[in-house]
Image (tube, rainbow, N blue to C red; front, side):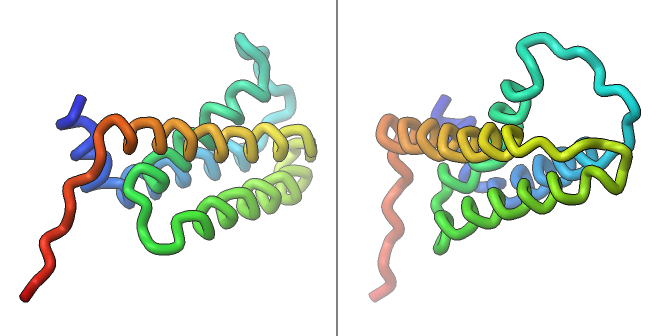
Length: 124
């Protein structure tokens, strides 16, 4: 587990960019009929945005809370763009996205409490 957490902290930016790209592409993919999915659409929004926020909150770079706010703003922008790609805007999706962002941050905080990051050595 420690190795996985260490790798995630090391490659948090790559993971975040990958997840953000997948979310954006899937959200803006034109679809006439959305497929029926187990668990409902909102659960998938929560999982996707929790996965997006998790590596950022695990690493906690400078301005990590601002990054979470940017993710929420991006989700709002995606919702506004969806009618242009034969999809529909659903404001409840934005609520699910916000909940996912908060859940991802909370899960990362739990991991950071259990497996704290190593302290950086200061140069003398």
